[in-house]
Length: 350
Length: 235
Image (cartoon, rainbow over all chains, first blue to last red; front, top):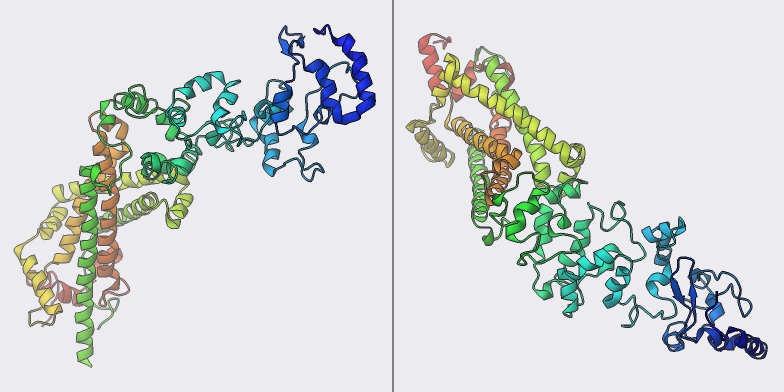
């Protein structure tokens, strides 16, 4: 089973060192075997698993000061025998832990997430902490080399979600991000991190009725999208539309942002392959409105009747504004005069 | 000032048929205004509360459309009534705008401002009642038409561009506010709050008007009826 030929020779030395130096030199001991780039194991599936541990990588990680057995706690003797269990991060990362390992309440949310639920149900493909955060290479997410750094998140998620990753790489969000617009959305901005849910779950930030709220976190904010010249009123105009009102009151059969703009492959409206490109609007509307034709593309979609650019709609709106004001003034004036005369007449009668 | 519910000889002003038309029109319009405003004001507490009461957006739409059906029914019936019944046609003829209405209006304004003027002798319908009738006539037609196009938007958009849909939506919403003002500020003042009718002009229920009130408010009609011998004007 073991691929290394040096294992037997290393064994005697390892025991010797263990007796002499104790835990502090655990890494050195482990590296006797695991420091060899050629160390590997063939899994029952036929997959070859490298058992090499890059010392440099480990020393640069947030766990530089930890001993191997701090995480691989089921190893009590060298050489270790039998199946080595998966590392459980919660051994240290629990609230009030004595070693000062960071712990936030949000980590606990993982258990309720789509990943956590699947992992707990025994799905071995479901990611646990180290699948996203890294194992020996674990770094703080703020560290540009971390696989949880914003710039690497799509790639990290894409290791499992490959097709979605492919779509996303074509999207305006990734293109903007890649062109140094670092506010642009990566996976976690829409889906959440430890709270991630399947989009069918009403708790999900990507649930049908919650999509507008999720998109508006950036798209309603001048501070976020405004500086890139993206209009923020699209959120407000959607909110006032029949779609927006219906979804606010729990409608599940009306369009949210993604229904028209797409999901992972959102493209700008001037891109001919965009779902909201003027040529594609009949087809996009036609997903719900059977028989949608070119008429659906005649006129603004996110229309604001109070803005001049709304054209005739603006003028009609303005006309009614002034009609309402004049009717109000006219009627109160007429009534006021009527009452004025009556009370004066009444007064003079006394 | 004599209270309007004081006793005295009365004369029929509105037939049962007309009163029923009015009640159905009133009920459907009220429901339409409430369900319409809950959509128009969906982002403030009153709209949210009304929407909750109406069973959400779906329930609201359903009630609004049923009420619209009643309104369309009563409007359609009214058209037949004024076109094909003798009584209805006569009422419509009484409602025709005349030059005298403008003169009456001017006289009332002068009177109200305290200028010397004769009190106008109104006929069966005074200028305010005529104006309200026509305003509601025009409003109903435009609301029914725009409402139908919005109701059957998917079908309408086979020929109607998106901007026309937006235009109709804006028109339907904003016009409802004007209708609300005409009804609640003007019409309700006329039939409830005006000192001589307060708390209510009962003729919309009883169909009858006191001769004294007829003489006071519709002098021309009173004189005409007296001459025709329909009523006893005394003296």
